[in-house]
Image: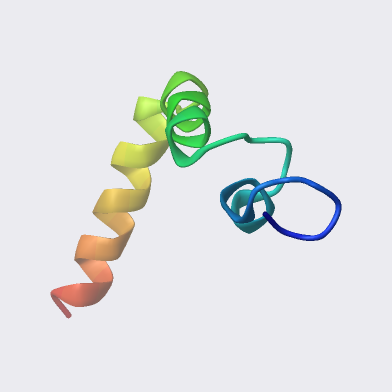
Length: 49
């Protein structure tokens, strides 16, 4: 346990997420596939120069 009674895992992730799993579930549920595709294309363009 970390100071304050919370687990080290909770302290490490912060932002109100109790675990890595809950953080990932939030990220998946709140992702925008179109934005991700655009970002991927931008990165590929930079990498392939």
